[in-house]
Every structure is written in structure tokens, then in C-alpha cells.
Image (cartoon, rainbow over all chains, first blue to last red; front, side, top):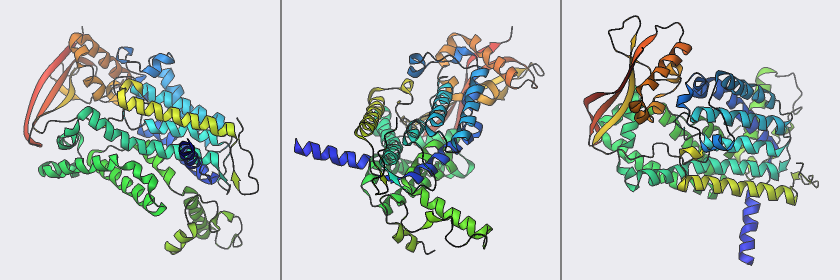
Length: 318
Length: 160
């Protein structure tokens, strides 16, 4: 019994590890900016469903539970501009709960419209977690150096959802493709159907895509190990995943955009924001502000969760 | 909703017991839903559906299917030309049509709705008076495309 309690205690301490409010502020900013780019440019199939005949509508369970209708031009325009205006308002950081959950409802419904015509994109589910949980942190300012358990929980949940995407997609490959997935021609199929000109050589050397399937399966199954790594290696693994996604995009023009934003929850975003701000100040207003003024954020160690910021700063050789 | 208990002078904002409890419950519920979706769910469970990107096994030797549409326009009624099967052109995409092949074969009149959507989305383009779904089978031997492509017409619709 005592053992169970201590495991629960450690899990709870891990889930509620205090993290900087400023990190949530930066991630929120990136998430809401992404929502605007996403609905206007990246993922527009939902909007076009407003023009499709309802005969193609195939309600998902969510649609049956909430009795959601087939798309119409009015509905898709409302959801699209609801996302944009809601996200623009949320970018100010004001009323984070009301505005954040408004954006969440609009974006999720807009995705529902996109996915209820027979084709579900499998890369967008984890972003729902970010939209649903970021508002729970409440007010979070870019300059707020305090750490908070609420911020820690939201960031931890986003990290878990992002990593679940890898692990559970390996699981899906085993469930639907079977263990023989690693020896199948699935990647050949992907490159045949949507390969870019600079990916065609992969088809001429078939072992490349074959071995890539083994590497991908191994990487996805072991993805949760990232939570056991040191801060330094955690960042290297995040960088490796970004490199993987860049290669995938170059080969078959598929990128899991919302998921890429989620992966940023592993990084000390508030430090990057500080560095960007001080670079900006040095570059564009040299001499305008006395040294140190309005830059409390850049003091060493300010508001950083579990990393050793002073080490990192030294390493990067400012 | 407010659950922060203040920072006790330590620079760390703690949560109340209730604040911790409901957050932990939400995380447990999300884990349960995502795991259940991956274990027994299907696409209809979205956002808790299985993450099955590229999850099917394609036989190393066989054929890769690719579906497209061809149309006859009012300008050139005698000729079938390929048309993009994209949301921008017909309101739905290729995968959405590929998933409904049995329904389309049972009721080819459904293809007429694609011509209607095309007219709404591209009012300046020549009207479509005929539309057919074609399937290209690209032959693959030992994970390598041979260059051989078989094409078959699955369903055809003509404006009445």
C-alpha cells in the first residue's frame, strides 16, 4: 500500500512539476498564431466541404453525440472566421479561458467538418489536448518569471499527447498492418502516390525505404523514453524528430503541422523569447535603453523549470 | 475555477487539492480515451481514433491503386479529360471518393453532385456534362514499380 502511495506521489509530482508561466505564454502565442495560419492556409478541406453535397457527409461519433449537421457554406465560414477572430483575441493573452475555449470549440468543430466526409487525417488529434488544456493555466504573461503547477500540468499533458502520437501510431501499424508492416511496401506506396521529384531515387534503391520502416517503427515504439532522458538529450531527440518530419515533407509533402507545434512544449521557449528580445533590442535600439532596463527576463536562471540555464548559456558562447 | 493558492514567497504557484484532483482526472480520462481508441476504436472515434498514418501493409509485390476522375465538358463534349480530384475543384478529396467506391458503383448519379460542387466552386469554368471515376493500378514487383499501369473505369455519370 505504501509502495502504491509513493508511486502515485511521484507520478503526481511529475505531472505537476512547476514550470514557468512565461513558457505557457509563449506556447499559447505559437498555438494561436498557428490556428490562424492553419485555418487560412494549411488545412482548408473543411471549408470546401461547405460546397459538397450532404450525400457525402458521414457523421463521426462526436457528430452523433452533439447532433452536428452536415456542412453548409454558412457553417464553414462561421467556424473559419470564429477561429481566426478568436485566435487573434487570444493572442493578446487576455481572458485566456473564455477566448481559449472559444478557439478550441471552433477549431475542433472545423476539423470535424473536414473529417466527417469519409477521410480522417490522423495527425491532428494531439492538438486538441493543447487547445483544451492551455486555457486551464489562467493568466500567463511573457514577463511572468514565476513557476506554476498548473502550467506544469498543461505542458506535461501536451508533451504526453505529442509523444503518444508516435507511440500509438506504431501501435496502429502493428494493429492494422500486422508485424509484417516493417517488411511491407507501405513507404513505396506513399512515394509512388505522392513522392516529390527528389524522392524518386528512393524507388530505384528499394532497400532504403524498407530499412526506413524498421528505423521508424523502432523510433516510434521507444518514443516515450524521452521522459527519462536528461535535458540535453531530450532536446537532441526533439531536434531529431524535427529532422525526421522535415525529411518526410521533402519526400512526400506530408507534414504533421499541429503536432510540430506540440513538440515545442519540450523546449525552454521563454528563454528563446528572451534571447530574441535582447537580440532585437541590441539590433534595433542600441543606446536607446540603458543596459539591463526592461530585460529582467534575461537574468541567468530566470524562471527556468528543470534545466540548468546558466550552463546552457555558457555553452552557447554568447 | 480559480485554483492557484498563491506563491508562498517561493516564486512557485501551487494548486489547491481540488485544482490538482480535477486536472489529474482530466489527464486520466484523456489517457483512457486515447488508449481505448487505439486498442478498439476506428476513425469514427476522432479525436480519439487510432493514429493510423501509413499503418496498412502494402504487399511487396502487387499493385498500388490510385483513383482519379475524368470529365467531359460542355466545350468539348466528345473528349474525356482528367480533372483534379481535390477539395478546391469538387468539394471533396481523393481519399473521400476512394472510400465510397461501393456506394458510387451502386448509384453513379452521386457523381453528379461533384459536377454541381465544381460549378459552385469554379463558376467561370466550362460545365461538366459527364464524369467518370477511373482507377489506375501501378504494378509493383518486389517493392519496385515496373512502369506498367492498368486503368479501369469504375462508374460513369452523364448529365441528363
